[in-house]
Length: 86
Length: 86
Image (tube, rainbow over all chains, first blue to last red; front, side):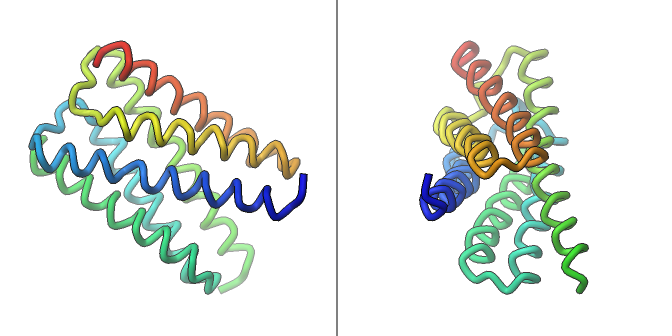
């Protein structure tokens, strides 16, 4: 397969994983109920996406930094919602 | 910063994001309660991690394929738990 398509596949996968947090944040914000969500999950995920954003900055990759900054913001928002609503 | 450490940062971030799903799967499996978890989130995340595993296979990267296969397995398990328990 052409390497361009393979790279596009990687970007699409990354965007899906990052964006998937958006409906979760919206749902938790609306229902104010997060008891089924694992606290460990929220903490580990938030640290992971913040490190990814840092990685994007360190390698001076604009699109990656933008995507991972969105991911980090959503990850931190989810952690705050979990800590707030328990 | 040395590029080796920057790459290690990326791997650590990836491992944290993938592994973070494990406590969630364990929690949902035990409690059999997933109503606070977004169905859209579970579907989009599962598609994303499956594409990432496919990406690892296509670029013939063993460690990446291994990590993303774990991620895909956990993502699919979470989706099944969500579909089962609502």
